[in-house]
Length: 167
Ligand SMILES: [Fe+2]
Ligand SMILES: [Fe+2]
Image (cartoon, rainbow, N blue to C red; front, side, top):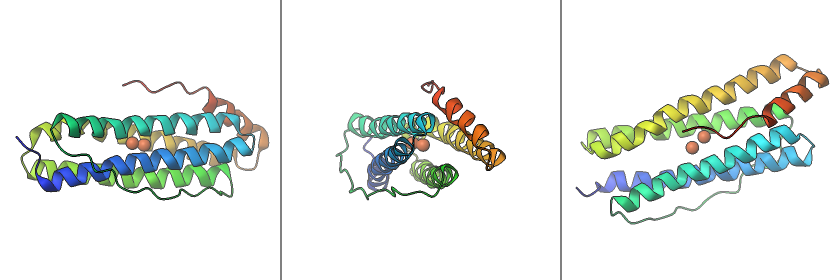
Protein backbone atom coordinates (compact mmCIF):
# COMPACT_ATOMS: atom_id res chain seq x y z
CA UNK A 1 0.00 0.00 0.00
CA UNK A 2 1.34 3.42 -0.97
CA UNK A 3 1.64 6.04 1.71
CA UNK A 4 -1.23 8.56 1.54
CA UNK A 5 0.06 11.98 0.40
CA UNK A 6 -0.81 13.80 3.62
CA UNK A 7 0.99 11.17 5.67
CA UNK A 8 4.00 11.20 3.37
CA UNK A 9 4.30 14.97 3.72
CA UNK A 10 3.90 14.87 7.48
CA UNK A 11 6.56 12.14 7.82
CA UNK A 12 8.96 14.19 5.69
CA UNK A 13 8.25 17.23 7.88
CA UNK A 14 9.04 15.10 10.93
CA UNK A 15 12.51 14.31 9.56
CA UNK A 16 13.07 18.07 9.60
CA UNK A 17 11.70 18.44 13.10
CA UNK A 18 14.05 15.75 14.45
CA UNK A 19 17.04 17.33 12.71
CA UNK A 20 15.93 20.70 14.05
CA UNK A 21 15.89 19.19 17.55
CA UNK A 22 19.33 17.68 16.95
CA UNK A 23 20.59 21.08 15.78
CA UNK A 24 19.11 22.84 18.84
CA UNK A 25 20.66 20.34 21.22
CA UNK A 26 24.02 20.84 19.53
CA UNK A 27 23.67 24.58 20.11
CA UNK A 28 22.83 23.90 23.78
CA UNK A 29 25.86 21.60 24.03
CA UNK A 30 28.04 24.41 22.67
CA UNK A 31 26.65 26.86 25.26
CA UNK A 32 27.45 24.45 28.10
CA UNK A 33 30.86 23.65 26.63
CA UNK A 34 31.70 27.35 26.42
CA UNK A 35 30.65 27.88 30.04
CA UNK A 36 32.55 24.87 31.41
CA UNK A 37 29.53 22.79 32.29
CA UNK A 38 31.09 19.61 30.94
CA UNK A 39 28.44 17.17 32.16
CA UNK A 40 25.51 19.18 30.79
CA UNK A 41 27.45 19.59 27.54
CA UNK A 42 27.87 15.84 27.22
CA UNK A 43 24.16 15.28 27.99
CA UNK A 44 23.15 17.73 25.24
CA UNK A 45 25.61 16.32 22.76
CA UNK A 46 24.26 12.81 23.41
CA UNK A 47 20.74 14.16 23.00
CA UNK A 48 21.73 15.75 19.69
CA UNK A 49 22.98 12.36 18.44
CA UNK A 50 19.75 10.69 19.53
CA UNK A 51 17.63 13.20 17.63
CA UNK A 52 19.63 12.49 14.50
CA UNK A 53 18.90 8.79 15.00
CA UNK A 54 15.21 9.64 15.29
CA UNK A 55 15.39 11.57 12.01
CA UNK A 56 17.08 8.60 10.36
CA UNK A 57 14.33 6.23 11.56
CA UNK A 58 11.79 8.36 9.66
CA UNK A 59 14.13 8.59 6.67
CA UNK A 60 14.56 4.81 6.50
CA UNK A 61 10.86 4.21 7.03
CA UNK A 62 9.91 6.52 4.15
CA UNK A 63 12.38 4.75 1.88
CA UNK A 64 11.10 1.35 3.00
CA UNK A 65 7.62 2.48 2.00
CA UNK A 66 8.86 3.59 -1.41
CA UNK A 67 8.19 7.27 -0.70
CA UNK A 68 10.27 10.24 -1.87
CA UNK A 69 12.46 11.99 0.66
CA UNK A 70 11.99 15.77 0.67
CA UNK A 71 14.17 17.22 3.40
CA UNK A 72 12.79 20.53 4.71
CA UNK A 73 14.87 23.62 5.54
CA UNK A 74 16.21 24.06 9.07
CA UNK A 75 16.31 27.22 11.16
CA UNK A 76 19.29 28.56 13.05
CA UNK A 77 18.87 27.45 16.67
CA UNK A 78 19.03 29.82 19.66
CA UNK A 79 22.61 29.96 20.95
CA UNK A 80 22.48 32.33 23.91
CA UNK A 81 20.95 31.33 27.20
CA UNK A 82 20.73 33.06 30.57
CA UNK A 83 21.40 29.99 32.73
CA UNK A 84 21.54 26.17 32.74
CA UNK A 85 17.91 26.19 33.88
CA UNK A 86 16.89 28.29 30.86
CA UNK A 87 18.52 25.75 28.55
CA UNK A 88 16.63 22.81 30.02
CA UNK A 89 13.39 24.79 29.98
CA UNK A 90 13.89 25.51 26.31
CA UNK A 91 14.62 21.81 25.79
CA UNK A 92 11.32 20.88 27.45
CA UNK A 93 9.42 23.33 25.21
CA UNK A 94 11.01 21.69 22.20
CA UNK A 95 10.16 18.17 23.37
CA UNK A 96 6.54 19.19 23.94
CA UNK A 97 6.32 20.45 20.37
CA UNK A 98 7.78 17.16 19.12
CA UNK A 99 5.28 15.19 21.21
CA UNK A 100 2.41 17.17 19.67
CA UNK A 101 3.81 16.53 16.18
CA UNK A 102 4.16 12.79 16.85
CA UNK A 103 0.60 12.64 18.18
CA UNK A 104 -0.62 14.47 15.09
CA UNK A 105 1.25 12.03 12.85
CA UNK A 106 -0.31 9.15 14.75
CA UNK A 107 -3.77 10.64 14.19
CA UNK A 108 -3.18 11.07 10.45
CA UNK A 109 -1.88 7.49 10.16
CA UNK A 110 -4.82 6.17 12.12
CA UNK A 111 -7.41 8.20 10.21
CA UNK A 112 -5.97 7.00 6.91
CA UNK A 113 -6.02 3.39 8.15
CA UNK A 114 -2.28 3.09 7.49
CA UNK A 115 -1.62 0.62 10.29
CA UNK A 116 2.01 -0.01 9.35
CA UNK A 117 2.70 3.65 10.11
CA UNK A 118 0.60 3.47 13.29
CA UNK A 119 2.80 0.58 14.40
CA UNK A 120 6.01 2.37 13.38
CA UNK A 121 4.98 5.46 15.36
CA UNK A 122 4.34 3.60 18.60
CA UNK A 123 8.03 3.62 19.49
CA UNK A 124 8.05 7.42 19.16
CA UNK A 125 4.94 7.83 21.31
CA UNK A 126 6.70 5.95 24.13
CA UNK A 127 10.01 7.70 23.49
CA UNK A 128 8.42 11.13 23.95
CA UNK A 129 7.16 10.16 27.41
CA UNK A 130 10.78 9.32 28.34
CA UNK A 131 12.16 12.47 26.75
CA UNK A 132 9.77 14.79 28.56
CA UNK A 133 10.30 12.95 31.83
CA UNK A 134 14.13 13.14 31.65
CA UNK A 135 14.11 16.85 30.95
CA UNK A 136 11.42 17.62 33.55
CA UNK A 137 13.40 15.70 36.19
CA UNK A 138 16.50 17.74 35.43
CA UNK A 139 14.52 21.00 35.61
CA UNK A 140 13.19 20.03 39.05
CA UNK A 141 16.68 19.17 40.28
CA UNK A 142 18.20 22.39 38.95
CA UNK A 143 15.41 24.39 40.60
CA UNK A 144 16.06 22.60 43.86
CA UNK A 145 19.78 23.38 43.59
CA UNK A 146 18.79 27.03 43.27
CA UNK A 147 21.75 29.35 43.68
CA UNK A 148 23.86 26.74 45.46
CA UNK A 149 26.96 26.31 43.24
CA UNK A 150 27.97 23.00 44.86
CA UNK A 151 24.59 21.44 44.19
CA UNK A 152 24.66 22.63 40.58
CA UNK A 153 28.17 21.24 40.13
CA UNK A 154 26.95 17.89 41.40
CA UNK A 155 24.08 17.92 38.89
CA UNK A 156 26.54 18.69 36.12
CA UNK A 157 28.57 15.62 37.11
CA UNK A 158 25.38 13.55 37.30
CA UNK A 159 24.33 14.68 33.82
CA UNK A 160 27.74 13.68 32.49
CA UNK A 161 27.32 10.16 33.86
CA UNK A 162 24.20 9.54 31.82
CA UNK A 163 24.82 6.63 29.50
CA UNK A 164 23.47 6.19 25.97
CA UNK A 165 19.76 5.44 25.92
CA UNK A 166 18.63 1.88 25.46
CA UNK A 167 16.08 1.01 22.83
FE1 LIG B 1 13.19 12.98 18.72
FE1 LIG C 1 13.71 14.36 21.84
